[in-house]
Image (cartoon, rainbow, N blue to C red):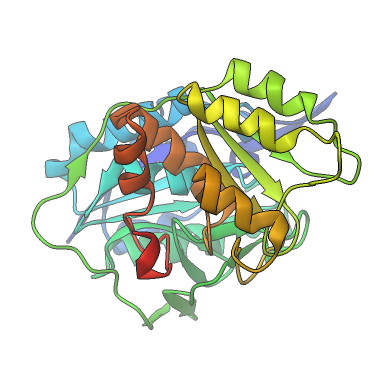
Length: 334
């Protein structure tokens, strides 16, 4: 019988109703009392490094989770992390960079309704997660509403319904139906897992809107080592006279800042070569392009990359090196 470590972090799944709204109260061991059938599937141990609403999740928590898995990696066959849904995709992406090439499954799950609710989705999500944690799947994944999604490709796309997560620009890894795992894609791994213990949390994100003041770029660059800009469509920045975007980015890059352009559009990714408003950024400034990566993956990857190196050429190489199938891009940009 396989041994699975359950890591509780709080979130809706562990919440109870207080006077001012839902708040995490139950630990991992208490959650598992609601699904005693898990004990017929595997041997389970529980650990609770923290208990928070996932709105309060931070890069420091990601490092804590990665360290927890690292310390216990050899003792267990798989891992189930119970987590709030709002930042689960960010955590899944971060763990995909902090724990690379894992032959063991690292599963994140949660719920849209607390486990104490009559109409909760938490029990089925937990059972499905343990089924995946006991399987031949590998690497970091989110298991939710019967779908198994690669950690670097997950995004929360519904705020209330049980169909909370989607796989962006990549197929689902598997489905779980009536207690049966139906795999489609098995993530590849070779050799031993590689663990990392550093992130550069000084990464900012600016979502472009019509009329955005370019001074915001200047401010964010002064506070950050890396800046991600969510542009429109396939990508570009305003070029109207006096807009100032290009000059500010040029100065930021000269100062050693890493700048990534991505898109607000959920599917199909960016292509800065299409329009003049994007082509110049790539040709003359060497701005990094996210292509088909999710924003969550871009945030986590840039934090990981900048913790490894601040040299522009190495930052570029690491950013464009695919990790856990996070990125498909033209080979000419490698």
